[in-house]
Structures are given as C-alpha cells and as structure tokens.
Length: 161
Image (cartoon, rainbow, N blue to C red; front, side):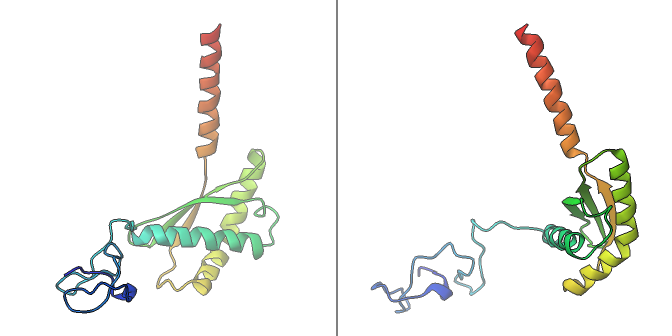
C-alpha cells in the first residue's frame, strides 16, 4: 500500500490497496507507516528546543528593548544572538551597539539595570515554564570580521606591489 499523508487524501482517480483515494504526498510529515506511526520527512529539519527558545527570546528581547525600555543608553542596542543552554535555565544574550567604548559600557550598564524587567516581560509574553537567567555580552563577531577583512586587504596590497 502506498502510505500517503492522511491529511492530504483526495479523489485523484487512483485508489490505494484499501480502496481509498490518495495523493502522492508520501514525504509529508504526517505520512503514516504501515504500523500507524508518523514518520518524519527528510525535508523537515530537526531543531533542538533550545534553538527554538533562543529565537523566541531574541525576538521578544528585541521587541522589549525597542518598545518598553525608556533608558536612552539601551535604545541603540541591537540583539544579535541568543544562546540558551540545553536545560533552558541560562541564556547568554549577545548585542551590538554603534559608538565608542563609553557608549558600549553605558549600554551594558543599562541592560544590567533592566535585566529583571526584561525577565519579567519574557515571562508575561511567553508560555515558557521557566524563564532563563539572562546575561548580556557584547558581540565582538563583527569587529573580528572587520579586523580580518583589513588584514586580508593589507596582504592583497602587499602582493600587488
């Protein structure tokens, strides 16, 4: 029997072994095996819960900073990445801010002051059983990329000469 997806059955003029009409949606997530258990499609990627919670936290924290926090030191902050532990108890929030070292330091102090409020808002906005402890870190990834780009540019200039 061709085990098509039970959600995608339709009259197509071809009957399966059981006499029911079905589509050829065999690679659908809802496809049933002969034992009646759902089998996963090869096209659907498998994500860990911590990755999904990371994306949720990134979206919510960005929205909280943009909409709810009035501290001018925190306004220019952009959340770039959130890393949540597998047990969902701790989250590291990486952020960027344009400006010199004093602006970066002021943003970190402002985020530390707003940490408990941000956790409270996350608890109100999400259905997480436990709101993770959050820590803020300045994201140096773009700075490192710019430094490497500059070094490569210098190497290219010395090769040309």
